Image 1 (spheres, rainbow, N blue to C red):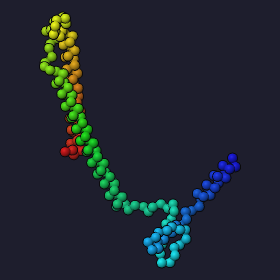
Image 2: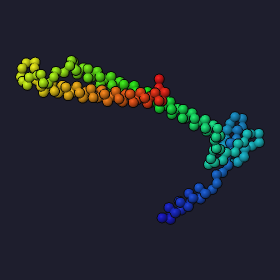
Image 3: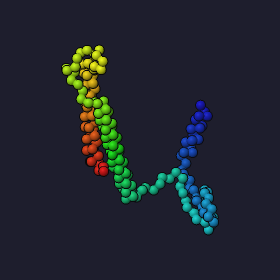
Image 4: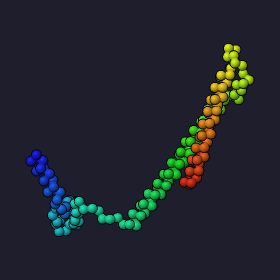
Amino acid sequence: MKKLLLLFAALWIIGAHPAEAMYRCELHGAISFQDTPCESGSQTKVEQAGKPPPPADPKSSRAIQDQLASYDKERQRHDAEYALRDKTAALERQRATCDQGASGPAPDPDTLPDDNTKPGGRGRAAAAAAQAAANRCNARVAELSAEVQKLRDDCAAKGCQ
């Protein structure tokens, strides 16, 4: 326990001392750092260890903020373009899937016989299942179309090309 207290006391004492000056000396192109002033004939620059950097110029700080805002706006525009592109591709794939699945108009289940035992016959149950699948497919196309329209509006608001 005593060792722990001594350790904390030593750390506290070390942290309590103010930062000491550091001298940057340049002599014949060689740079060295030392805690005493440089010899005559060399350039001296005093650097304070632990000293915070000077505050930034408010004008340059504002310019940086404006540039960051511009970059963020450009990123959002690109994100909107990519989202629109991806959703449009998904819509086209869904349409192709629906077109491929519907190799013609689905027969009316009421006009088909109930007997599925005839060769090549589809029966009412198969026709009803095909019609339900076509309805689900068309509903998904409608959902994707609405999402694409929403993304187009969002993209137009952000200045997409």
